[in-house]
Image (cartoon, rainbow, N blue to C red; front, side):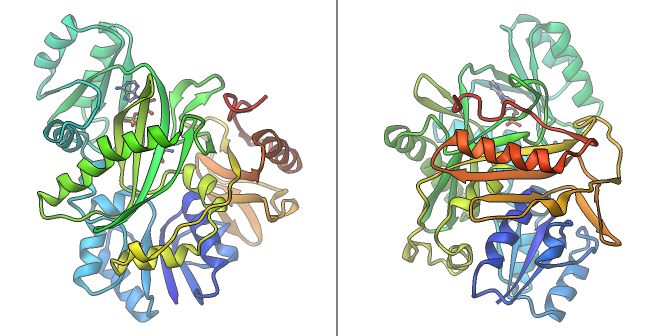
Length: 420
Ligand code: AMP
Ligand code: GLY
């Protein structure tokens, strides 16, 4: 089987790596991929905004199945386009992708189906929003409605901060803003909860805890994710049941009311407050770095699971996992999530070998004349799987020391709540 993967991050390298272990896969194409995928797949750089060009390439190469990693092509309707052109594709369609593409769409579903979430208000202009913010309690949370790569969320401690957030959003920092969301601040512990669905059946796909803030101690600006561990320390059978019954099932059956079926990964970003789950956000894809943290624990062939989803036969598949702990530390370019230098050479990458339990997944990297360069904010993912989070962390540290890259930085406290 020939597979195409859309995306260029650590998540896509991890998917590519996992598929490359399958005997059923003959060739992998990554659009556009990175220096890591270049070793095991063919990287193709074409304009992903031009679906026609992509279609021509997929047909020319007789690619059997397309897997979409990031949210943008999903929200832009790439699944609908490929399906219309009879190309097999794994991911949710444009309407279902609104679960991530519009926070207000999701809030309305929560309201209609009584899904636990932070109390919220939707406002249409600056004056109205600020009037409300003068009277509200702090901290309060302000969110842009549209896709903002994790950056359109402001936790505000007073009216001045809130006012600044409202101005930024309505001035178009995240694209045209017709609406703004103001939310109650939930004080709890976060958890990433994943399911995979074929539209008829869904199965859980493990849990993780992401560290989204750039600085140690979970402080500083929000990022795409600085590191992660799986499983979440909070998950129990009782909590899983609550998440499924109060959040996942009503969402999926809610989509049925639009005559839509959710096919793909669904990632619920949750806040757990006193053992009760609240939905903070949905993402219609695997998380990054959650994906690279979780996939090394998967025992079942990933392509069997994905193909079964595309065929509507997920119920026939048993998804099996190693009973292990996995930890991931993300190495970033100095300056991230603000400005950083592009195209900085990383010299010692070849010193780091993937083993049965230790993995290096590339993200913002590029290979040119046999040299590897950092070209993105998040650059490399160091993952280790073990019976014990402490051992995983030690193994990651050994590899980070081997790399010894002066162009980057990483959080030294990833997993601190599960480490001794
Ligand atoms: P989001 O992009 O919606 O996941 O938000 C980014 C981060 O902001 C989340 O991971 C949380 O840490 C935080 N956050 C978002 N909404 C809330 C909320 N209602 N209460 C507390 N923290 C929140
Ligand atoms: N790690 C957070 C995300 O993928 O959105």
